[in-house]
Length: 133
Image 1 (cartoon, rainbow, N blue to C red):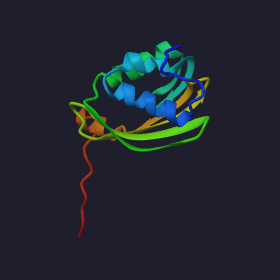
Image 2 (tube, rainbow, N blue to C red; image 1 turned 45 degrees about the vertical axis):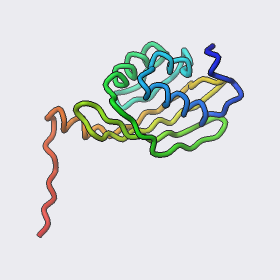
Image 3 (cartoon, helix red, strand yellow; image 1 turned 180 degrees about the vertical axis):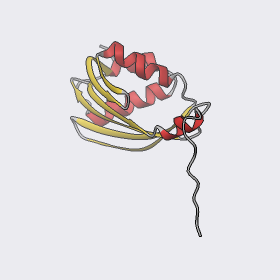
Image 4 (cartoon, one colour; image 1 turned 90 degrees about the vertical axis):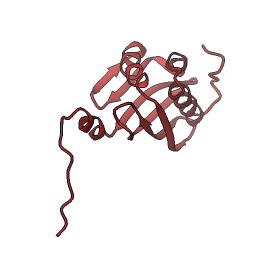
């Protein structure tokens, strides 16, 4: 196990360390916080295992130019991290990760993010316009 991951740290500490590491263009190092048998619920569907997670999140992390941590809450077992990301095509895409930590590693993660900015950037939807009379 990576020396930076200590089993005595609470879920919030682990979630923040994971977020800080992947968002600073060090996704491979961030995987040290992920359990090999992680169960993940993504907007695209469920994933099982570290390699499936690496394929999903690593691809997204490689496109991120910047992140802003908006809020983080948690205790010894669970944490929620809310953040905003900027990619070359999307200037603002808020996301959140609800994680469970056991033995210093993230064992479950539920990822939520606003898919609308990505759909707009891809031309898949037309932006709504406000009409006020």
